[in-house]
Image (cartoon, rainbow, N blue to C red; front, side, top):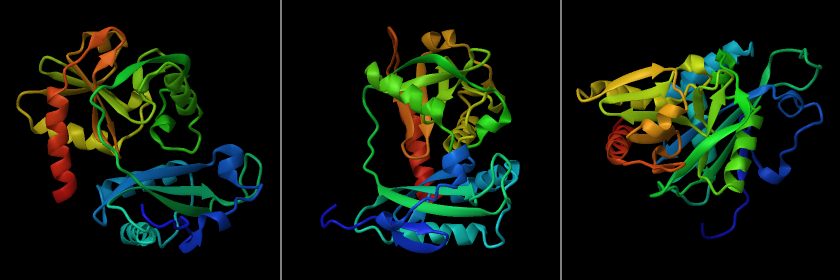
Length: 283
């Protein structure tokens, strides 16, 4: 990135250096996982699919009974994100994480439902991998309730699955719910293609309510060649699929090339990625 420059964070609207940012011992996100976050992609000074991210964030705050500040408008948070991005020295594409957590104090019961927020930014240079191998993570399960659709700061299952993937030379892991159906992967949603049917786990299966997931479903519905199904998916269906791909805010669509002994084609996933890229630029 050229010259070294300390990273700047946005803490409740004030830009501070990352070294000056400190959490107290009463921070509720740290003590209880009492927080949520939204990861967005900023490209060419544009927050990609920001309206969708914003409304998901507001719905999550309401679900968790957080008090939404009056200033938390669509325009306000977008400008706070872009203000933080402008503090970066270089870069064209950025990963931005907007963290929101209840203010300090209380035990399980908080002192109040007011919130603090932190925005941090990192430059990214992601390119889809040409080979991408996945497998199941079966040590623990994702609960298939609506709370699992919210991006809370408690991501222990995702962390353990990521460690498992690293230890086994995998690129990602499939997470299962308590009924042993496919829920999602460690960092996104999963889609299976078999002939002219494309399946993805329904939200009631315990997957994150992904923004890219939503956009891809919209794209597929416009294709006359395919039928999209949000449904229960057995792990056995992965091996029977013609194609498998993963969706994520940062990389869009990542085709999967291998699951155990099964190898997949990537033609449809790559076509969908091109359409998605066009939407990111023009949408």
